[in-house]
Length: 247
View 1 (cartoon, rainbow, N blue to C red):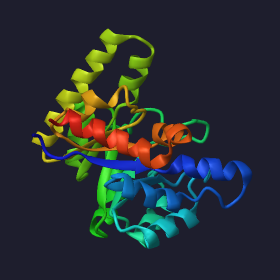
View 2 (view 1 turned 180 degrees about the vertical axis):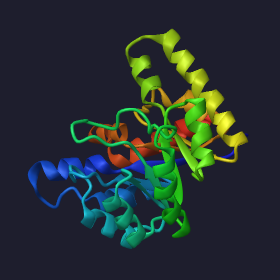
View 3 (view 1 turned 135 degrees about the vertical axis):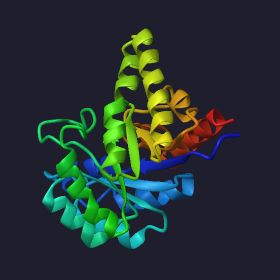
View 4 (view 1 turned 90 degrees about the horizontal axis):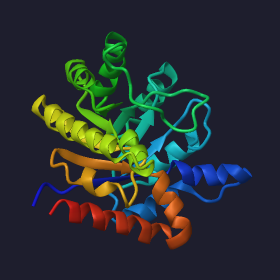
């Protein structure tokens, strides 16, 4: 049996549904507590510059209510750094962000922005936050992340999932090889390896089976599936598939 795989549940799109009506319901904090009961090991929330889903008040509420770790996703901006330093969540995951995108597109170009990112993450590490960089499965990006002081990399699985659903199976399998290789390489450099983006019941098993990956962060699919089966059963089924993949 490989090391137990952690599940981080992203609750952003509970807030998306709430914000569609401008009301107080559904409550992302309530969703986070249900996720914990269903077998989640942590909660992920992305506070975007435009506050399109998670709000500042949500982060405050999560920090007050959670007994499990909060993974605070954020862009590498002074505003977000200040918020993270005020709350000091268990982990911060630095992601690329563009106003016009529907969801995060690709990973950070750490190699091109290494000096700025090194200076950006240092105060977060000093404050006790575990710093993760969201990157593609690329050797140079992994090497640079380790060199500038990240403790964790989260490998972007979006391309793998897209190729699967587009039926481009040869390209999907090649991307899976890259993910496996970079997970192993990252661990050899002393990085903790996470993965996420776009994972579903159909695509999670090969990623969960990568032994170096110790955490998956999954959100949009689980919130969507909750419409049909409820949040607790949706998360429990993902937990079951992940556990099976580790055997």
